[in-house]
Length: 298
Image (cartoon, rainbow, N blue to C red; front, side, top):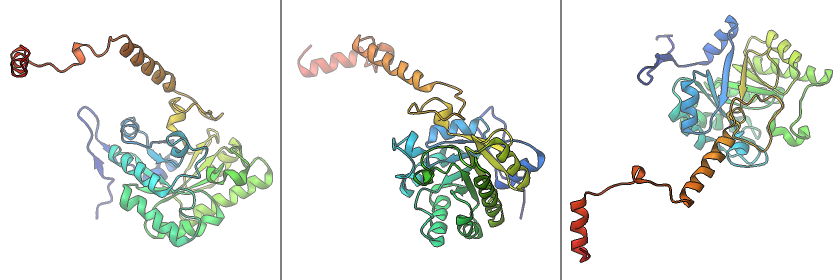
């Protein structure tokens, strides 16, 4: 059996690229190359992220907030996640595709966790799954991996535990909390996770953990010492204006662009300057006259 990474055909003018795998994640860490990851929840965004050469796309349960308008990620269901994951898998063929396991899709039992993880690959075209938690999720991670499904862990600010954490706030800022995160990280590595997200934790802690683990760390609000970085695409683009986390760098202000475009449309329609002939379907004069004659209006 060939061990070469499968190639993916791209549109004309683009260089053929290799499909990103978990093996490439490990190789990048070994070689000291930074891993890039962004979220996507639909076909056009996935297509754009893929064409930008981003290593991995996370179909995050953050869609509950930035797409569906929920106050947090807790109401997101498996059906929601599978629906959006399928759209992303149709748009991206290069990036490693990771489906975020939603609240209560893996907490009840290990058997439930394995079954739901399998649905992301079997029904939605994902390459891997992500779940939150440390030592308490180690057995679930172990069994999901044993079923042939790569698992990314998630420590620090874990949004599905927002009520337990007392809100969206930085984590592991005391020595005891930092020690727990370290233990959790090693537990996930031992259980077979191929990578772990570190969210909103002290930068020096994230760097220390990144150096000690053999698997890559992906930071979000965890400083530059991680093996890779991820942001929620809607935050990066300025599409979500309810709030912007401190750790987000906005590379665009698309909410303002959209508002300008929508206002321009409204103004043009009300002024009857849109649509013009340029935007209208025409009918040949002889056909129009024939119609009028048939209607008795010629």
